[in-house]
Image 1 (cartoon, rainbow, N blue to C red):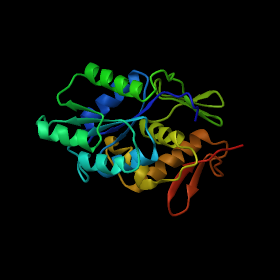
Image 2 (image 1 turned 90 degrees about the vertical axis):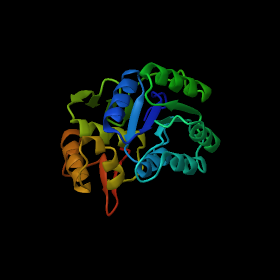
Image 3 (image 1 turned 180 degrees about the vertical axis):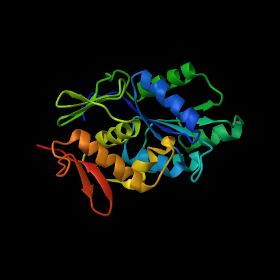
Length: 231
């Protein structure tokens, strides 16, 4: 991955429509965007993907947003912008006391949210990162234009294939479980962990020189997959 890539934002939001709207809006403004649809997946992604900023809904299934924030703060100081439909002062105070950096109440304007994201990134010293693509060996992936190339040749990916490759390229060499990868596809209708195997097989057919003997997308037996560095 290039060191000068665009800031990476993680959206933890269980409402599929709002999550997709945020992804499209923030992606169109040059950010790399990942998403998780529940608290457990959001905490895993926040810890393992190391985003530059987390947009975190308060009312999440499984593990609530405030608990996600509390656990995240034991290990990371990643900037966190809380989203909530609860506008009572006590909730805001609790979120800020747990370490949230800002608080936006639903409904909100996208322009306001973008301004707050930029302000938090400025505070974190990330304001001037260019919007370049991710590169890894022969692969190049541009989050803004959603273009993927292999050795300079354009490759057409489905949305799910693009999202999986994006996650893997954000953390090369890291082993992802099938469950972690599946959590990034939940807006596409969910599915079983077998769904991940199918998408990886299709990615190999499009990205590898020899899909039967993959050099980039490695299967880690009993766990999941990782993107290998090829010399």
